[in-house]
Image (cartoon, rainbow, N blue to C red; front, side, top):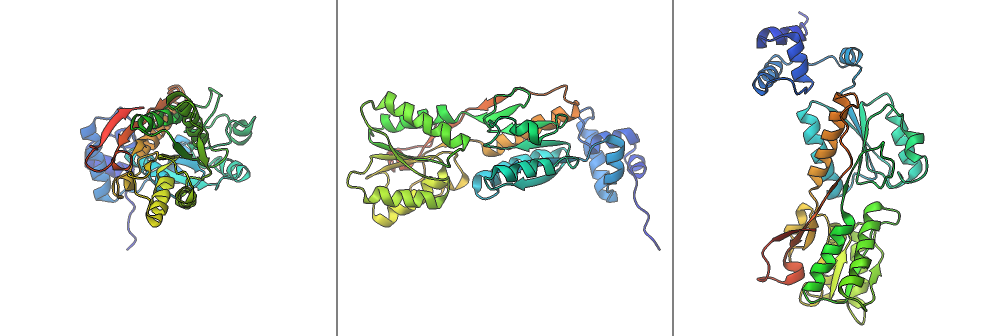
Length: 346
């Protein structure tokens, strides 16, 4: 005997509400009491109701899918970002279509164009958005977009960014206040917005807090391996810096490994600091001083802003905003026994 499919009317009858209320509850609309929403969701789960995606798309002109285009999917930063995005997407019953382009502008353009007609809106992290015409050429004007940590001057594209510059200044200030003057910096990928702003902050802070001391800069690409290679060069140098500020935590952890191999003690010989406060930063030895970016919160806020814009048909688009990281002081910059996990706004 063929199994009869459960319909939205069945859910409404069992939950003792209207079909319209079931639809609003399942689609995450705000004008439904939370107790009613939970009742509808529990009933739908019990009946194993599965909305018909094609019918829903035709009736609402919505795919219930959000596109996410990122430079990469590897590493704790991107996994945390996706986690925050996904938490909000699941709470509001949206699906994700995720694509990465591995740092190639042509591939990102293809990824953006491939999203057309498949998604209701886009979250984009792009180092190429400041190129003339890049976003306009690759995105339909009618598609809601929120940019994540992306340098863009066009106000028609709202962006949620991190104060990379101010946070880098705060980190150098902390290292200088801890008695370090020769402070080296391991950078990030060329052309990357985060890396560029953190390097700019490092240079300006060196001139402000340790005037007369020449900056020491080492190439990096946000990976453990680039931090490891830079750490080996620093360990072998005749005059080592007193402190190393890495452009992100993964680079700092690679540098820490190289120091351990070479017998360079952190922080007794060289202090070390990173940026991002990935989960691993508090579980290495010594624990890593860093700038805390709530990466999952960044992703969640961006998704919430985008869904609000979609639900209001673009009438309620939040303006661009900047998240301010926190300075987290741990043992790698001040030594065991001298630190408690200290937080300060950048």
